[in-house]
Image (tube, rainbow, N blue to C red; front, side, top):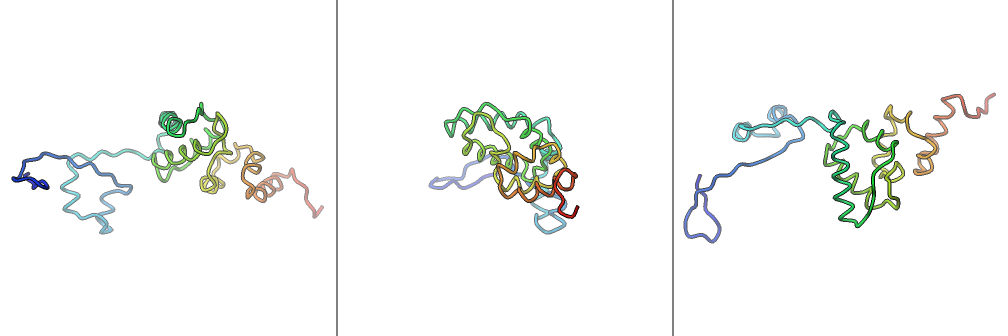
Length: 171
């Protein structure tokens, strides 16, 4: 292909590859008129399918360590890792935003943490809201969550009553 280069006196031959990503299935995007069929055929010669992060829990540790190093440098911090409760939560999280969501989560936690080890208390509220309904909640210390997130107090009380360990006014 030949193209015109800005401020050039002649056309120049170029050889380029375009790398693009979609967070939806390209064939569904074509059916829903979100992606033009002709563009799909032009770009589909070297398609690579990368499974969602939630289906690759073994990759989580690598990404976490990488992003911890990156954001420790950027924010001049010395965070050495994360506790087991946070690890359990992260391994069971759905990661709708995939690796990008994990990256932003780690950045937020590193930027705001005052400790050398990240924990649930460092989680942004939007993540906390999403994980409230996960089955992994049973493995997380609800007391720590309620201290960290005041909004959790009511849910914690309901949890204790549901378990039969709480005070019931009707008896």
